[in-house]
Image (cartoon, rainbow, N blue to C red; front, top):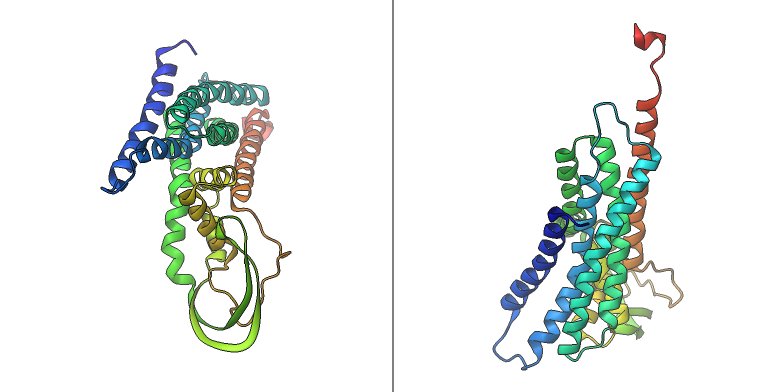
Length: 308
């Protein structure tokens, strides 16, 4: 952790967060914004960007820290040590950004709870993506290719799933008969919790069955960050609106009473943020397991046929 490479990656990633946040704010700024809009918005954007940035940093350290010799195989202990080392390096980055975030929150007179939740989510992303990076390094066995593969996986998880989901939206569009909705109940941030359906036809409606494709976007660190941050900062209108629309798309409840089907308050729902973390963890577990199996096969001595 005392090397120039470590601090260049850590500080470079931290600076990149604020540069991206600045670009987002400049592009979205309006002439009629209140005077305190910029500090509060900067705090919100940086807090949302911390978990995705932590995922990239962790993937980099997991993929870049294995330096095999010509006959060296990644044993289970070596892979575990690489994962732990990558997590520790990533946590330094998280703590650095968290410290500045708390200062930002104080200057903007905003509660520090959002920064704390963002740091916790960033820590979880660091654990998951460190495992992915170390597993890819073990499978590829070439540092440059391992880093390239790690960045490809991180970029795909961040934006690829969202882009694919957006491209598939026209494919899940249909015209469906609907009836009149009654007693619509909404929860936090306007999320539809329940409604009853009458027998009175209301014609047909344009329905997008986004519940069939939202699983592609769920593992994105930015989606996870938005969903989990919204649960903590319920008073933020923009964050609440965005998380409500994402959860609505995952539930497929944008249009009520399709085919006269009611929605019960006790109907099973999968929180999008938790589902995304579980999918990330599942992928990391599969990669680590695959790396261990490949490692074991490489270390098995060749039999008589293999020596012939």
